[in-house]
Length: 77
Length: 467
Image (cartoon, rainbow over all chains, first blue to last red; front, side, top):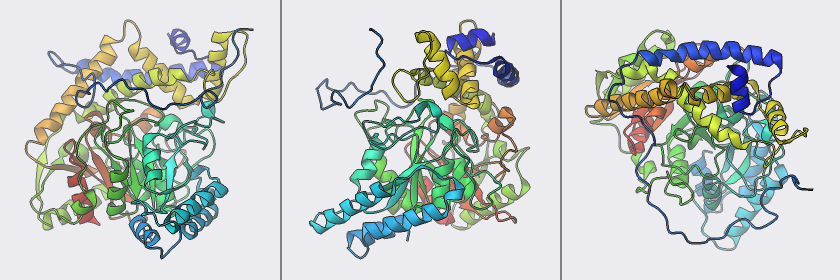
């Protein structure tokens, strides 16, 4: 499982670290498994916090200029 | 001088911002061993202070934080000042913009002294998950200042700056405030814009103030709060005069004492101190009654499912392409993997993997969706309690500051130390930690008050009554 998760998360792990993390995760997942015993029948999930947010007007405003933003590596030679 | 005194003095021209800044800089140097700061640029601080003094000399009326030295948690994005969120993966990144909270303290004429130490990406409760250097509690340097906003708490507790900003996802302002003996406020979710806060768990993160006293915290919160068009979750609600609330007293307030926050694992001295503070509030005119928050015991599990899920998504952006660290490799995917392996510390990897697990096919319903439902149950507990009381009072942390190294090898034990701060975060409620009577050892103890959404006023009234 851990190898699959590491791949999904784009994390390269050396074998020693993978082993340590696997042990930690087993313990933590065993702990959070207490959630399975709670009766949540008919309870809606909390999917967002705060009130409904209105759409704002789509007006242009000043932004970063070229040279102020990110520098990314050349990917096309 | 506290923050309000400094601001009034600088506005009146009795003190220069530069003198104040010099004093803060020399204290920062004198107390460097505490590890409160990750970045201080004295020349920049002086230049900024001169700017404030010049502004006054030109006849301008200065803002509410005129010349006040402030420390910012390194998760707050600052234009032209390195911002790492405590991670090697962001080392060397110099943001091209100011976050909204940063911008608002600058508009109020505050002077940013530096960026403070923190657990990497705010993931930790002891400021020990660090990529750069440890942070120590000024009351006992062998002990943790708490986390994740440990450096901001220490900057205030060690009197380097009178105020600081931190961020609180599951207790990261309140717990270090408690462990270092200062005031820390987590506002209602949405009260303060998260624009320019390096994201950990977006449905939980809030920026909030640290201060040596309640009124300074009220002024700082007022400065940063309010609607911001750059954060769709920021609330468009009136901002009360929280400083004035500090003078209102607590007569008639109904306090609820949740039995679940006084159970096994609570240090007897912490319990005695908090109960004594409750008795003082009762003498000042509050009524006190026991209440029940029956889903409290599930808050730790719920939080660590939801927060890690959100973190695994938020931290996907750190891929070596856009920010900071980049580890060259044979192809793009190998570069991502190598950069993230080298850039993230152990706890961050642990949480990304856990979050990836709870969101992955086959486990989503059993973990993530189920935790979202339990979150609803936790919120309903508070809704029911607030039909009967105006504030819920408890310890902030089950123990005073623990020893550095004591829990760092056992992530689960560390998570369990957040048991009293997590529920209010999951419910999006405002909550604060105020100092109450210290332990015999001299270690500070924190008193937590939780109020209804948008009712920070009640927190400030309680905090002022305890001072």
